[in-house]
Length: 250
Image (tube, rainbow, N blue to C red; front, side):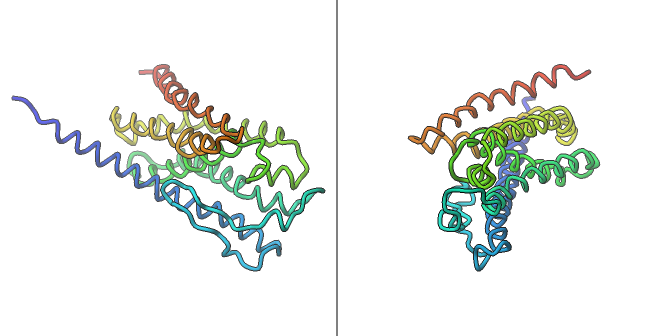
């Protein structure tokens, strides 16, 4: 008797749609946290009369958002301006802290009883890493934006943030690949299709959707070239996970 494959196919489609919906919900939440970190910092430091200056954009494509802080008016060029560094760089510190807390939580979640909690924290970490990759690895030498405002405010060479930030990101990648991904395999009960879906989505989100494609869209600005890193990092992540899984004891 020929068995129907509609059951497994429908199950995978539901899982994929659930993963996409979970990611988009967490992405929207963290975009709000990112922009309001800017605006609230500016308000608390006395540079804006209200924290409600955020301009809302598209929650799906993550475009069109702005914190509404008039940096050029508040911080004319010249001199060290710590407040500019705090307002511009606070979201980067926030994302780094969220990654550390999220990774710790993923390693503490009881498996497999709390699958939904694991998935939520997993995408939470992925979105925060996506933002760090976009700003620190692909826009490290920007004259504006979060990295630019941080560097200008403290009068630092962009290399300091780039090297320190990249070292932190690579360390988190190692923990993610070698500590979190094996736990993910337990959560999906060894399902190759579900595990593969998560790996490909993770690579696409971190290196293309929220970083590489976003930076390449800056063309003709020379920064667009750094977005090409995503074209290498995307398959690199998938191959690295494959290499790790092959080296695991059976």
